Image (cartoon, rainbow, N blue to C red; front, side):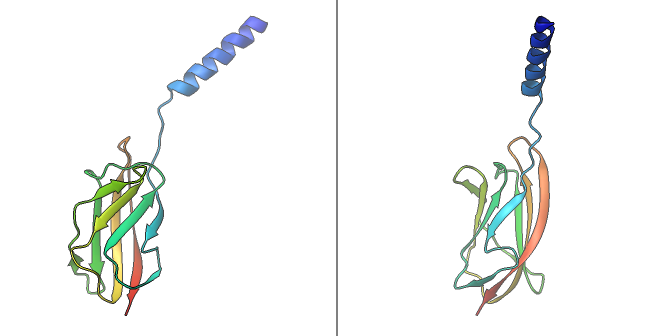
Length: 121
């Protein structure tokens, strides 16, 4: 009986370790923040995800209140690979902005979403 229990335990551990991780990179925090009002110049967007992302496969767009696209620099990952950064070609003027993101985690799962923020005069 004890041998059967050990075999069962060993099988459970094997299958638990053999199961692939099913991680998705969800937005955990952003700067400027979701729904926030930024005071002062905004020169970059920093989006922190729950998992590491692959910047070459991610997409980020920024539009103003008139739905005009704001030019962004090349996306890079910082820190532990969970922070996606897009530097702006020029600081943002006062107004409302929408960020649309599409994140691809290092295990290729895709998530996407959007949020708005305001830059105060």
